[in-house]
Image (cartoon, rainbow, N blue to C red; front, side, top):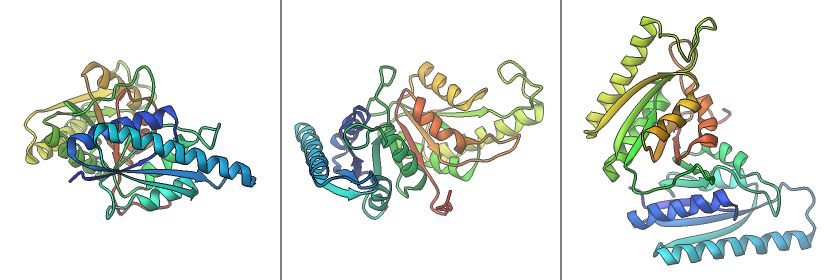
Length: 291
């Protein structure tokens, strides 16, 4: 089900881009969008006047978002709340209440300072609900329904969780599923951009891809492609997305370590910051909240 979508908004360009994409999804799925604006109480000693101005700004941001939703025929619920944006959003983003969180990859704090980016990182790593992030830039494409979905994988539990989520979205939209493994940690004596992979390492990574493909096919996805690359994870994901017409990247928030497993989770935030398309992230519920 994809019936309830939480969209934190702050009026910034990335926030507006994410909202537009959320409305595309909601309009096609018949979902309800919950608009959430949080007046940041962490800012140093706001005067009453400043606080009133910020609350008024929040109400105006929500009003503009409601107008956007109404033009699309999307049902909305609204909230303007005071508090720490990070904790308020995570507290709202429960599986009992929402199926998806959609938010900008960057944003702004109060009237001038940009902070939604750090808030997004916090939410991505702690939300029990999948989080879809979108950037606002000339190199970014936001399209829905999705036709090509990319899932970088390293065989970790979080990557498997992302694969299952990616397969679910692929089934909903009839998209082709692309599975990518990037070997990002090679011995220093090896040039990752040009050297051939050691035979055992290549076999291990290929096994990860084969298992992931089998999992996707068992989930009912018929159109699955697999690719193995070496180099920088964020750079390879971006290059693949651009060259293959990808319109959604799905990733886990954590991953394996060691020579035969790249640090998938450590690259997720960098992918969010550079991806030319939306990034959908998921984490396993048993993850330590202190991570």
